[in-house]
Length: 114
Length: 451
Image (tube, rainbow over all chains, first blue to last red; front, side):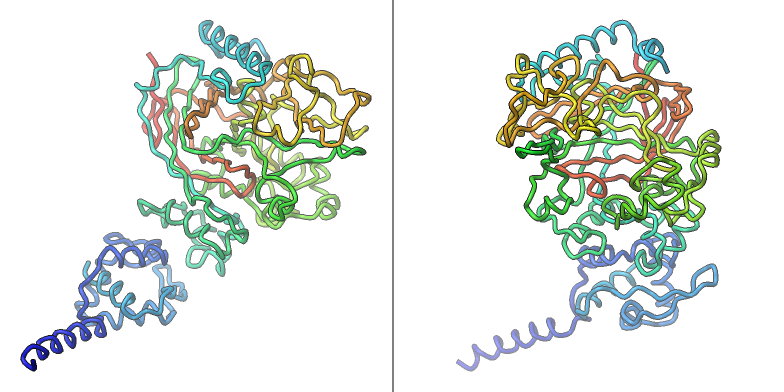
């Protein structure tokens, strides 16, 4: 009996770990892109070309170079920090309209995958 | 343009077809049938199967006025870009932008649409085809929608004739005190490059606070305003920024002399509007323009008010011998073609005709024989079948009127498209981002030369 329950307990524990640690969740690109666009992030950030804000490709390269991860990206999209634009003006960065860390993480990972 | 010149816009064959269409329209009107096969039938003779189609997506903009777009607290992150003249699509460039924006605005509790409109789709898919010959440009539109061709009525309550029915956003309709009744309309707002920012922001330049259903100005404020007095207008309608010294304040209208100078320089937008009730039954399409107000072109339109301002009674009633009754009642709305047409089924109103409470007459009388001048330049044919509207708008080429933007072979114009359906008017329409239309020239929508 014990031999049968141990693997099940281990499996349940592993499953629970997957749910509770979003960093290990598989990237859902479609869901991330949808949240990104629902929040109008695409109006300033294009995948490859510069708009009002830098492209996702450029952001991803910068994060890689500076060894930053999705936590920094989440901070950027949730803190409403001032951002400096090309014309020198500063503006409050839009805050993503979700407090769900899993969703935020998925969006951040998708952005940094460019 | 005089009537002879208007006729010159059509080939003899097309004139014959047009005459046959009008005759058929009248016959259908006399029969009082619903959605007869002839009303609005396309008489252009064009084989549309050979004309390429462009897909447009129109979406619900709600209260996104010129002022809202330039308000940093509202149009977050884009107010200064909009103010400097950036195009809408420089940011709104996603492949499903219209679907996304329309759905957001109508999902409820959105600041751009305070009225709940459950079930109303956020966007409409529309097919557009364009062609031209030596005389005219032809635009064919198809979209799925409801067959709303009625317009509010005057209803006799035993003492007075009062308005019955109204557009869906009107308060009495929202409160359930009046039924939603309004005609379907399809519009093209056209500029040839002379209206600053039109090619970037299109119709949004004309949509302002103070207009109907956009925090409307009070009657008293309008009456007290010198510019509105000079324009002889009692409410605020679409206007272009150049017509105001402060574009965001309808009260700062420039003098009629300054407006005339802007108009002479071509600083106005042409407004071509097909209407399901007030123009389609007589084969017409409005011709107007937007500058200090939403004006009709010179001449006589296809329709006129059916209210006598002095007596507060209708001017015309139905000819019972031709229509079947001298008036209609509420239970007949949407069961007959209730078009009141001078020269066909209308006779002068008789106040002693034994009117009973509940009798109703259309608010507008159609006047096919009177329509003339620049106001009557455009033709239009619309039919509804199996949930699909097909509308053809005919616009003469090379118009030289002072209130027209000429469509010329080889030329490209900027166009904003709009659809009012679902018994709605004002902000309740669907709109497109600005598109280019080329008459035999490369553009978003290219009109092809007919053989």
